[in-house]
Image (cartoon, rainbow, N blue to C red; front, side):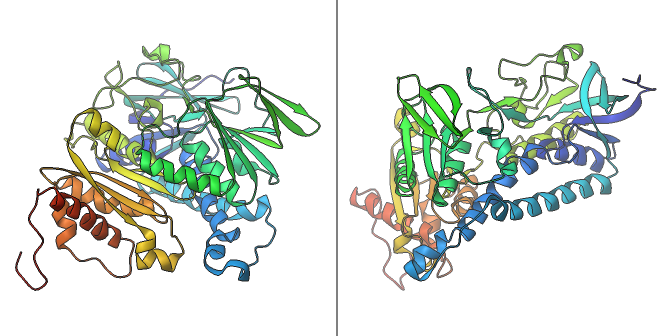
Length: 479
């Protein structure tokens, strides 16, 4: 490798061009600082645009449209779905990915941020080398932000060959759709892909060593999602661990720790993510990562070396593109002495399975453990005109309300547009709103937003039955 020349000086150097790194660099540039971004891939956008969030969510929409799942629920036998190929599904994915990359690159250029393509590694606390095609150059900065994201985690004893055994990063390179698929790991990514492929009529088996799905989520909503997954043909093997996978005659033989064995044409490993810190030579900067490649930070995303920050998935929970962006912005502002509010704790979660699932706030189990008195109100899409129009009769929205203060403690959604619908509840909760906001306000008809009104009335009636509230005013009367 050719030796690096004199170091180029910057105020801020960011390693990684995903949402966290991009936002950190742009924020620094907006503050008049000279910023640079290092990206080891030939394209910008990180995991979010190239192998994770954008591809999987675009694939989901392609599945819903091209499989005819939406149309079949409305028109039944009158709709005839054609045979689909991997190329059909991924064509839309490739187009969206390309456009998003262009947006990111344009933002970097427009803000005067220099982009260096190559592998970044620390040479010292203030120096980072960039290696590409046998050439090396050195960048020096007052502040450095680590935003390298993650790579797929693979359980011990399992080999990924990227042909019969894939990781989620390989999905966008699939050449053909399998007739059967085993998904190892029933976390968010595993459930998303399991339901997507099941919607295509593929025989899907979802395996996880835990006994329950999505332990962080509300049980009522998870049970409804599980029912829908089974209705689409997903076979659940919970409480099972994959001991080994072997290829035999073009099929993959999965041996479980319990002694069971079964075959599948294709295996998708979805067993968590690992911080992509292996090649950063963190020790040269006085840093180290944990066993999962994650870097510890404080409330301002500073590492153990104060002028070095880490943001995004590499710091662990919550590992969402939305929160990662805000972490990047916050880190850059803190580095240059600009006061900001801390990233809010009241952020929404979305699982882009079929059907969608989203929430903000607490679930019933958490509140019960803390002895918080609450009641719930539920609206079913089948009760809402918009749900009938969309052909979604299984969706639902659930409000969790404090029994005494009537504050909204949690909002849980399952069904069409759940990841959009949840933001109404988030706004009301962030502003300290109560059940009365939904009781007293009018929502467009027909919309899914009406679910909030129906759920609020359901909760209000339960509270009234307890004698906790007075009867609502008659129509035309002042409350």
